[in-house]
Length: 284
Image 1 (cartoon, rainbow, N blue to C red):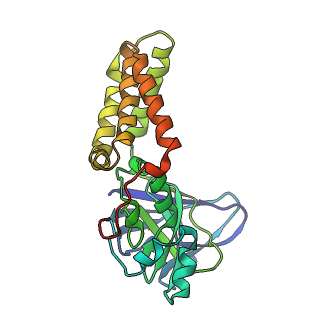
Image 2: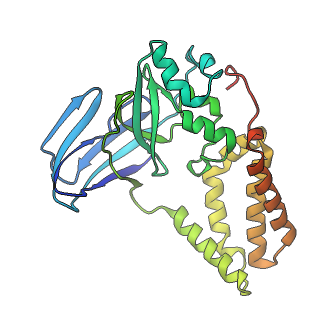
Image 3: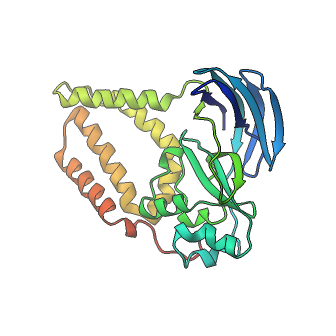
């Protein structure tokens, strides 16, 4: 999966307790290296914690190699939850006697994310709801999972850093997660959209600045788009119409492609409830 860096900047002078990445179900961490020495490092409640003395504005980083994998399970409580609203799921499971914990970490897009652990299994009501409305939400990570995966599993594109009892207060975490090394996709995206801007001003650039970005996008998202097309073709067609229109702008603008994209864009957002088929838990 590659090398990553977590970064934290102190808002004021003091000691900060930060969780360190470690081997857990769905993730393997190797080559852990800190940019400054911790006062102490210890394990507590299945977390690996390090305490740092930092001055105001001082930065500490941890670098590591990360390998992740999807988690899939079909716990017996899954069917119970599908009859209830997602916001009530943690309370229902706690009432039934399950051990419910809060999990904090990052999606590998770099966005902080929080979910739950139920007897150690992931439960992510937020992504369940989001993917019901917009099944393309995780395409930037190269995946398009079924919403029901999040009742006992996850997509394998996340880093778990801290688990705390639920209900309980949120603990301080690292502020940023970034991959180390040059990432071609953001550079190619900037180049592609710059060429679109120039072409829109009447100076046709040709497709040569947009095609490398499109090729990189196909390598990253192609398999996920193929799976998504079998479930909800209109969401994939929205993306295809957008890129077809963008390419035409660089050569010979085709307004009908832009109108097709706009129509699909509005349809997909005005009818989110039809985004995914209503499959049973056994089929998910």
